[in-house]
Image 1 (cartoon, chains in turn cyan, yellow):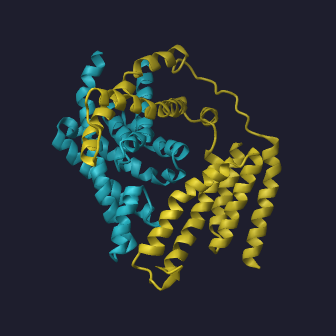
Image 2 (image 1 turned 90 degrees about the horizontal axis):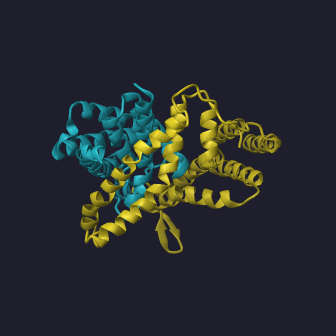
Image 3 (image 1 turned 60 degrees about the horizontal axis):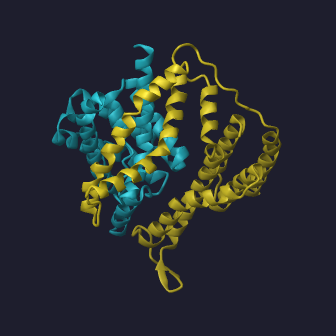
Length: 182
Length: 235
């Protein structure tokens, strides 16, 4: 790979990393309960080689730990699992249509919930993003155990979040040829 | 902040998190915070600490002290029924998080340029430092760009509220132009990096001051404090 191409990949990786950290703020501006902290990782899986995608996943937790909250450092495993799954889905052409992208997002959401639930339950006592915490609180008040509540709450919120992320990535990839021309 | 100091504070945090009860853990966290304030000669870390801890501690007390049905509802606080065992659980967890947040503040509340300098000074590939540096530069632009796009879309008649459905429908109208805008910067940024020699040869790291005298002077204070807390625990 020539120098300019490699540099392009590095800059795309940086932009994907910035999207992971910054899109949550866009969600806040619109008062939507989404974290959207994996759009960059999924986009990186579609645009970059595997090594740079994993780098984006790992550095996302570090950068979010610096910019937003140090608690993000604990979720590095979730980012890596999402990166690996996203690479698989990209290779299987899951981001070629809205339904497939939504399905890929749903699967990513389930995997993300399963991986992040132990961290949320053990380290943070069921408190995570406001939307997940609110759903967890409802389940806990209904008499469910902490683990069950966290898993169910994460499954609900993460699934919606990742489906939205999957569709955004599909829409972005669909527009990419136009971007390249401009 | 030196790398040695950062490592020491992290280690102290880990040691302190093994302390037996919440009171001692809170003392250890306060000690870390005091050292941090003294080093920076400002009280700003206190407000940041309160914000970062509050985002977890307040929901923890609300959820486990009032709502979590796993704990018995046999307490009474100004006429309001609450769950004392849930409050204890929330306090215990919050004290652990207090140490983590204090240690993380010591390590992470640094200038972005310093983070880049440290990354470049390590033996990691230069691309790691460049990815982080570029990302930290771009992150600051995102909310500003999103607000500009939001106003532009509103002026074009895109409805961005009221109600969650309309806001959700407006999400692609904000996010897609934002991503397009960021991706359109790839070419000029790449050319700028290549023109500065990125990827051409082995780049030398910028000089980073890794040892600061007053950091070294604060080490014994921190160590003494932790020893005193340890002694209190084992008294």
